Picture 1 (tube, each protein chain N blue to C red):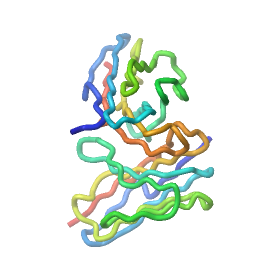
Picture 2: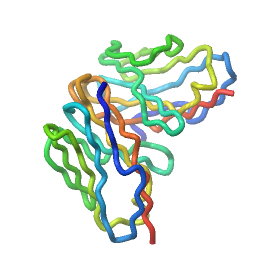
Picture 3: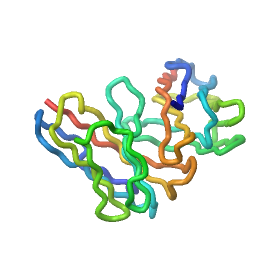
Picture 4: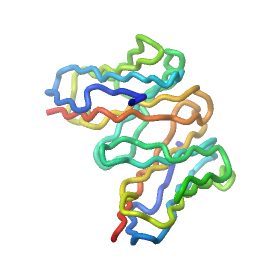
Length: 109
Length: 114
């Protein structure tokens, strides 16, 4: 079945630095979403992409359906960016999205 | 104001009992979903509804029954509860059920079965 492989599973960054999270897909996906789980456990929508790139503040995401991957770039990381980030992609079944296992981001002072 | 309401936030049940998880969305969306996240596992799709009709069911057990009394409601009835049912259950919605539609998630109901 359709699979979403998210990496890394955990990431530590110092304040002010940046890095990228990645999701690889085993099949062609129609769209990707990126979420952050907040301290209350709620999923906050960060990005929705059917193609190309989007940027919002210090976050930037890209999605390449042909190459079967998506990335989430974080720059100038802040302490409040700490949390768990998930990608989720919609594939052959239009009525569900498949989630990655998440990346636990820890921003260090 | 929260746009997707899930009630209750926390729920403790005994093995063998029955519970209903409530979900209401005020986004004007036509499709609704249930997902489950068990400990140390990714969110797993359970059901999808579009215009109050079941579109997909990935849950093997008939103990899980969605109920849609209104277009903006999709409750989840769970019967004969087992400890393995302990998880956080997330409701979601999207404008349409079309290919890769953007989904928005409720805050979840954390169910513990003793």
